[in-house]
Length: 441
Ligand code: SF4
Ligand code: SF4
Image (cartoon, rainbow, N blue to C red):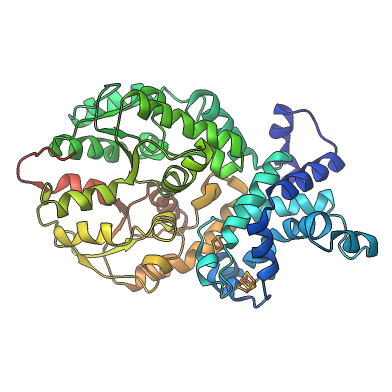
């Protein structure tokens, strides 16, 4: 499907825009997004190209268009033409040409299909430029110009309106209760005056119900006063993926309002990497003040319970095992030790990949890429390197702590006839609970 074709749904939902109007919208958006920090970042680039070697899309193809900093080139051109100290000179001498509609459509492909917002390039840049943050800002401008990919736009629109990314799906509240019945675990729902509010990845609801049951089971075992909330269930934030900042804010507000309504002091993000970034780091900014509760990833919470002596675990018979670090957890949240602490407590024989922890490669599906159909061929090329790293460990068991990573690897399993089955760390914990329940939170 061409990029122009993918715009059709966006345009059906908004007023139809001429190519010139789209360019003007994007340039306005770019100019609005460019603050002092972004300008400083762009001016600091010494064009060394090192970030290319961090990006799996470039590594897989050696195509210069996948160099991370190149992906924000229109953003940079808009800055030079509109906002930089020498903008009048650039315009007068025609040194920075106007970006065309065709170029912008191509950049949709570079900013969305070929970037997982994984942050590996930001980690490696010798000038400390946060390239993935620039890409996130550029996505905001593309969204404003009606240039977000259709799949992400529609899911974000649905989630903003109903709380569920899939409009036609059975209400997640009903699915959640059905999962409780199927796995024989009580699902705490719509309680008030609790310590902890639980959220759930849409991916688990639709693909991995055992992980949903595992979260409820572990909390029940720990004796935590907690609840899911019908009106604030979904952890993912498609506004974040699509670049719709205001939509992202409204989706986050839904969870914030529910956490306030049930008086939770802690909101637990389940096994979902991007949900962690959206809630842990960006929600307060969009809310306009500090969140009145803490936000923790479920592995952080469980590792803390372990260290407090409130959680004890049995030995898990996993054999030689390797672990995939979700990018948003290790690079944006520093959640590197928590999963290893849990695996150690279960006696897991861990064989690390060549690139693990903060330098782990993305699964290839992050940033909404797994939802963009036309991106699949490039995504498969990019993830070959990752699958090789997994295989090179010689491990027979493969674990991760993000359900979107799990779905991406599961998809690779059928595409490549890959023999590994990605497993959930949370499910492994739930299967190996030991001792009696306590009063954890
Ligand atoms: S590594 Fe940093 S300085 Fe070098 S090209 Fe990339 S963004 Fe520019
Ligand atoms: S954030 Fe990740 S996928 Fe995107 S350009 Fe940087 S290294 Fe590549």
